[in-house]
Amino acid sequence: MDKPIKEQYLVSGFLTLFLIHGMQVGVGVLGFQRDVVKVAGYDAWISVLIAGMVVHVVIACMYTLLKRVDGDLISIHHQIFGKWVGNVICFFVSIYFVAKAVNVLRTYIEVVQVWMFPDLPTWSIAIVASFFFYYVVAGGFRSVVGLTFLGVMIPVAFVPMLLLPLEFANFINMLPILKHSIVELLLGAKDTTLSFIGFESLLLYYPFLKNRDLTQKWAQLGALITNVAYTVIMVVSLAFFSEDQLNKTIWATLTLYKVVQLPFLERFEYIGVSMWMFLITPNIALALWAASRCAKRISGMNQRSALVIAIVIMAVVIILLPTRQEVNQFSNWVAQTGFYFVFVYIPLLVILQTIALKIRRGKHEQTTNL
Image (cartoon, rainbow, N blue to C red; front, side):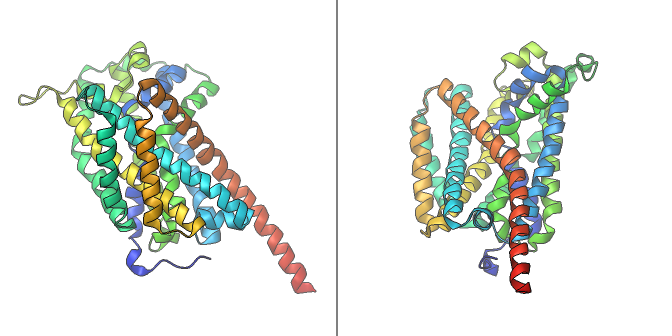
């Protein structure tokens, strides 16, 4: 068991709902439809449901790991692999969270450049964002949680706008159901990885939750809200676009906003892009906090120093990704890494932890008998 976190740094357990949901909904939702439809066609909504169900299973696996060790991911790695090997693995986990922050911010910058300000230099937004996220994350975990709460609540008013395209929907296109094989549906579910990952940060902020043993219901509820949201958006997209259109549309969710017409606003998608800023800030802030927390735990350095290093790396990598092709390759790399880390490695850790505990229990019993 690790040294307990002081009471003033803890947050209410129900906020786990916002932390899980806030990390899952980001830039991935802007265009996840295309990748899934390429594989699963009009059955893509089934793939989204499958991915959502797997997320619930992985969350249960994470709570199994965390409750057994009563600590965080670093404690789990130390318990299974020992201190030195565990620290090496945690170093790569820290890099992964920095990469996730890079992916979210760089993709959003690209959206802003394409939809609103084509001549806006990438480096300018990267530098301004770096100062902002240092200010937020340096304020501590409670500051990050407050930003996450606002990032979930503020855009809620704009969610119903995504249902307006149903006026032109043609649900008959989605029939008959299950035209694709199970393999295609599973491959489609795999392609939603970039949209669903992020909730694995629970492995690091778990010790900061009050009554953390009882927070799984809030974590599962947060994931459920995300699953419902993604499924609804996918169904609306399938009913509004044709399959060929979705295969060619990079940001289908933003395109849905173009249908919205208000007497006082001609281009409502500008509001959609602006509001998405509130959705991505929790993704980036919590990822940077997780990366700096991981670095602090394995090296003993001050977390603010680790945060500065993480933010500098983030800004430099963003500037070094100037074109759409490079951004897309980086996103694919993050998605692949996230898939194996979340949906393969975490369940594997449960098995390895079970074996390690049985071995230790057996050695303890032999020592006791002697």
